[in-house]
Length: 48
Image 1 (cartoon, rainbow, N blue to C red):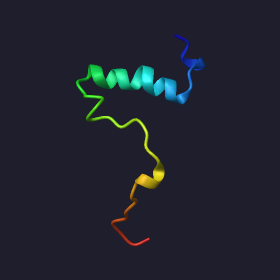
Image 2 (cartoon, rainbow, N blue to C red):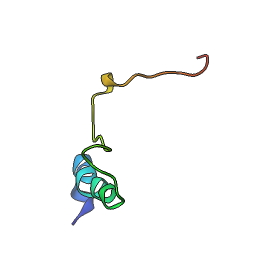
Image 3 (tube, rainbow, N blue to C red):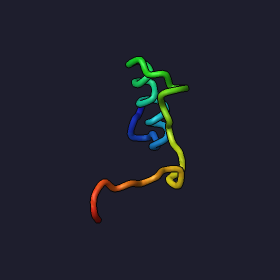
């Protein structure tokens, strides 16, 4: 497999997610591949 020809999504799906599953992670319940930034809530613990 030529890793240089893979895009970001391909690398995540083919390499990183598979490695996490081999390490014992459950991809259906413990892994979120992507979700929109507006779904996040940014908080700060101190003064800005």
